[in-house]
Image (cartoon, rainbow, N blue to C red; front, side):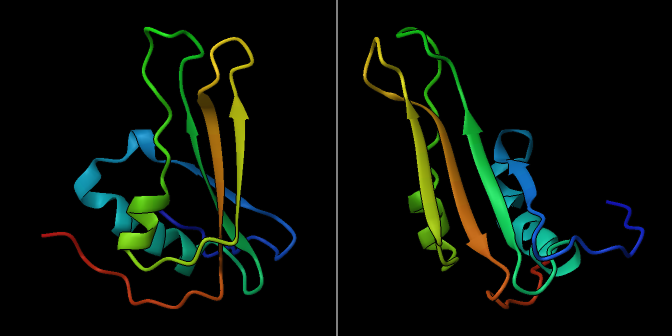
Length: 106
């Protein structure tokens, strides 16, 4: 990832959809974004978007994965399929106040 060194303002979010990040690199990528792109007092917004059809893929609920990484979850917003009753979009907020050194993937 190339960086211009510019940080986002505290009032601006940095959005991430983990579907594009290999599972083994997700933790490192979240740490990288928090360290380099989210300003103090800001937050990393992690999203999971999936199909609203019953036969389609389900949204990743993200909470177990973030808990395992010891990332604090500040807020969770779900969009539920009105027709089928399952989560089709989940948005999770992780505050910048989390301080962890970036872990380099092997």
